[in-house]
Image (cartoon, rainbow, N blue to C red):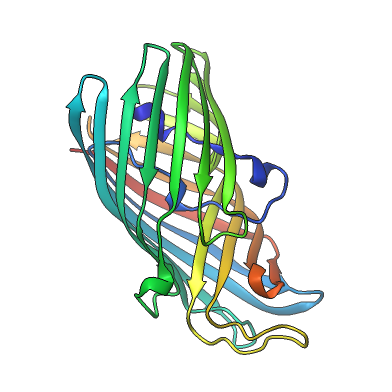
Length: 294
């Protein structure tokens, strides 16, 4: 199951597509729990010219379990939440919060020593957390195939489907390469970078990551500009691209803590149905997380 949790890269992101990362496309490890808090600092937001500034407090948590269904087949289950608290000035047409409340379900099957496949769905509410109805209910899914070329090299291929995104269907590919005894390269989504295992308890990592999601806006945010429809009952894709480094320390055999800091190089809020996009400037960010296994 750990192969399923390897980072993946969205080809749309690599080519500058608008669909951002989301916890929707980060299946949790089996029989595990995780909590994370991150802050990205206040930065100007532009639409042709500066129209305000915003900072983001991000909190997320998840737990999951696994139930064997037969030889080589397992069912994973769990739940997750993710909340982005936006602190914006009064001129920006942004909601106070963007969040996800979901149930996680997945099936994994190993076909051979080299090939395995999996499918995950995360039904739940993806919205500004003002309304919990069929309008804000979404069922994103992802299907993947993993090819273990060798003990140190794993390839991942797949497709993601998200009805709340401007690009409903997205191809996915990724690779995990342990190119030296203590070094691992992950090229994937929502994170790509290199990891160095300093010892059995401490590892250091550096690279790029993406935070965000696609949400239904039910709050009436008004008409932000001439020629733009009212920002109500529509969708927004939120994305941050981050460059940073951090460390992970195994407190016990089953519990680890990670810290990370760096620069958020780009922030975007895209109301794609209304043809209205807000682009943010760079700002610092910091994150801390707790991961454990049952």
